[in-house]
Image 1: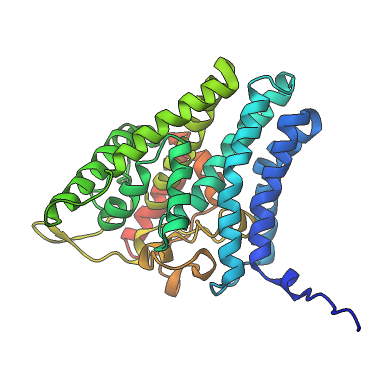
Image 2 (image 1 turned 90 degrees about the vertical axis):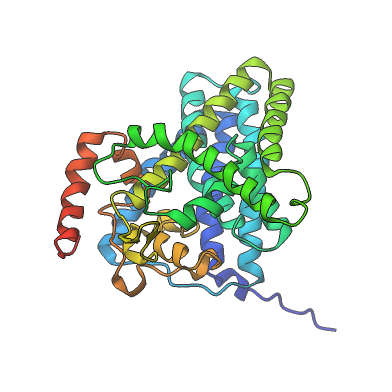
Length: 359
């Protein structure tokens, strides 16, 4: 009986591009956490210079990832990237706690690279998963956020940000002229409290109260559980490294929110109402490599218009109405750390848009 030839057509599936772009830097950084030296530097270099160079080259060539229908393989990709977060976190913490004898530069490159990966890739996959209606993917996304000590983003993002985006009622939308640091001071406590109040309102609206554990018990209690487990497994240095890693990842998340909605405001439509959200209320980034690595999270306008769409189905700048960032999302997030440069680049664009000219 002749052997059945394996079907290799799956290797051409576009979902594998996303998997490769997201997981290859995690592999390099995990090797760096264990072996140090060149592996740590290569992982750091991927998350910084190589992604930047790849995006610049793709822009010059006009490359863009086409839309990809949701199918079982694309679902497996997003679940695999999400599941990879937890062993990645453990390996990195083992290295950063001194378990592999990293030198100074190996430690530094691993710490910065891992923080960038958790903030850009883990955040993107968790963001994708918390919008899924199926229970298992949602829980995976929620626990990724909990492991980064930012579990409340699960509630605040879905219940507050999507409803009030580009209005003063959303703590995660930055008004024109506000620096990232001013935004940070408002967003951190504001997001936590707004999500909590919305969850309480939903529970109160249910007849007899909403059953089950309050989500904030999971967020806070789960975060405390992670802190205790990390302290037990990796000691004081691992515990401190974990706090730094989480803070770096949270910073990336908040930079993403700041950049993707800065200065774009919905007009008032009444005393307590605003015009519907449109693509003009979110900045898009058309970049190829960072878009693959971040599971199309920079296609943000279409995500707000259709929160239920899977990452591969998101379209770039629907109808050409969404303004485009002048550089990739990771680059613009870095620029936002220097307010004088940020405002010089972005405020003129927004002023032109308000006059009816292209950004």
